[in-house]
Image (cartoon, rainbow, N blue to C red; front, side, top):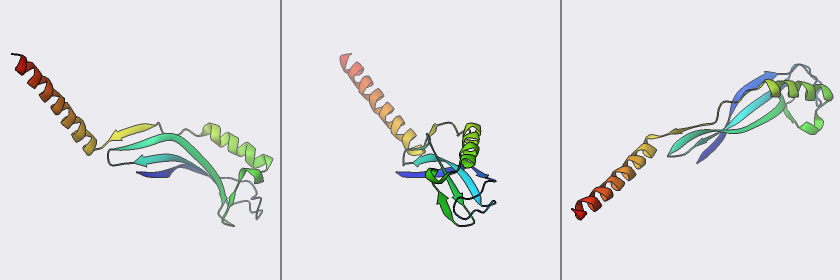
Length: 116
């Protein structure tokens, strides 16, 4: 089973970086969890976020956030709409479901035919 996070939205922030004090390097990224197995693909409701500075290549953790960064983050978090959680069945799943249905139908037919 493959689990990965897909970037849904990336926003450039106009705040000063707490590490290098650059005003044009902060990026807020929202990611959503994606599962991929032999039987299905699924987008889950799990959403993660991170703030990183592209100028100094550092991750800005919530402990380091200033009040301005926190306000901007809360604004973007309210404006962010994640993709709906969904599941897509692959061909192998449909074959398994069809096989089970045929086996059950065969058993029922055999039982009913034997009673006659």
